[in-house]
Image 1 (cartoon, rainbow, N blue to C red):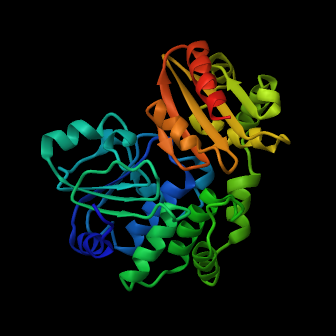
Image 2: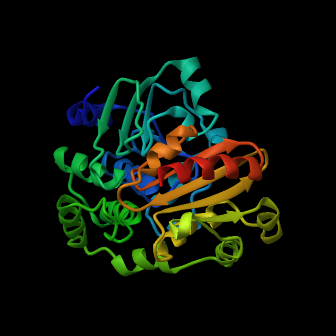
Length: 321
C-alpha cells in the first residue's frame, strides 16, 4: 500500500465521528500530531474522539486541546472510521482497540513514520524518512491548504522537537529544519517547549533516573551499556510509566557505547527501551522480540521475569556488536 495524502485529506475533511488513536505510553510526537490534526480539521465540531489508553504526560499540559483526550472506557460512539497516529497496528494502541475493530469493521487509516510498519487497512500516509509523525502531519495540513495558527504550530513543533531531540538526532533532515523554521514564524513559545520536554523533570522521574544509574552495567568492552528499573523501586516512589520516559538516552552519553538498553520491570513482563549509534539498527533487535520503532531508537515488551528477559535481550544485543 502506497502513501496517499489525498485520500487521507478527503477522509479528514468529510469524516464525522472519527476515532483518532495514539500508541500506548504516548510521547510528544504522538500527542502533538493528534492534537494538530484534530484542530486543523475541526475535529471537535465533527465529533471526533481522541482516545488514549495511557494517561497523557503531565509535562504536555501546555498544549491547547489537551483536554480533548478520553480513555477507551469513555468512548461513546460507534467507530465508522479509525485513524492510527504514530503507529500502524491496532494492538499498539492497547488491548481495547482490536476487539472494537473486529466488532464494528470500521475503515482504518494510518499516519506513521516508523520502519516497522505492518499496516493493513484502507488508507495510509507513511514516510519512513520523516523525523516525526508531526512532520508528516505538517505536510498533510499544508497540502490540505489549511492555515497553521499558533496553537497548531506549537503542537507540531512539540511533536518534531520531541522526536529529534531539539533537531540533534540523525533523523533530522533539511525538510525537518525548514518545517521547524516555518513553525517558529507562528510566534510559538519555543523556550517553554524546550524546557518542558528536556529540562523539566518531576521528582519521581529523578528518582527513577537515580535507580537506573545505580543499576547500570557495562558489557562488550564498553560498547554496550544497560540500566535496570525494578518494579519495587517504582512502587516505592509511586512512579508511573511516564516517569521512566527517555531515561534510556543516558546510556549513550557514556563514551564508547554503541548500544544502550533500559529494562523496566512490570508485573509479568519487561519493557525494553533501546538506543544505538549509526550502524547497529536496534529496530531489528526490537522486532526480534515483537517490538519495533526507528533504526536508532526502538523498544519492545517481553513477557517473563526481569532476569529471563534481560538475559535473552542482552544475548541478542551482543550479537549485534
